[in-house]
Length: 232
Image (cartoon, one colour):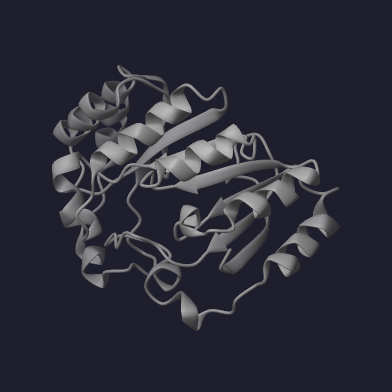
């Protein structure tokens, strides 16, 4: 799984559950505001934790936690994701998968095998702005496909967007709405610049005031069953 970090106990990464968080190395995007630059840009410089070590830790903690969150980086890049998640499920724990949505076939496969109970898709910005945020050419249709898979999968899911001024505006949120349709839960996240970022120049961006994000929430609530703001 290319696991490069573990957070033993989290009360916030899996809604309604106490979980252990596993961080995988490598990503197919290069978002300027990424808070895990070492995982994305040079995961080889981080200690690698074997699948067996990670599972051993989870086994020891299974009476203290009721879930595991797999995040990154981008977990769906791993060719071993299916058997790894199957071993977690065998322990009687719920699984949350964080993804950028660019590998819908992997997401669909995990859902079909009943390997995940909750998934979060990070939508960075409107389709046309993806290259400026992610430094990659992206087929947004893959992301829309992933959202559609979750919408009909019968599991809990959320869509989330970090609201970076200049890169995510109300117009961008409207374009996202047009591309993905109505969703169950949408979380708007405050841009945090006082942490190491993949592109340090993004630290000069002033975050939106709280009232702007609350205005965004009112708009996003028109195409989501529930919309909340995190980080204010």
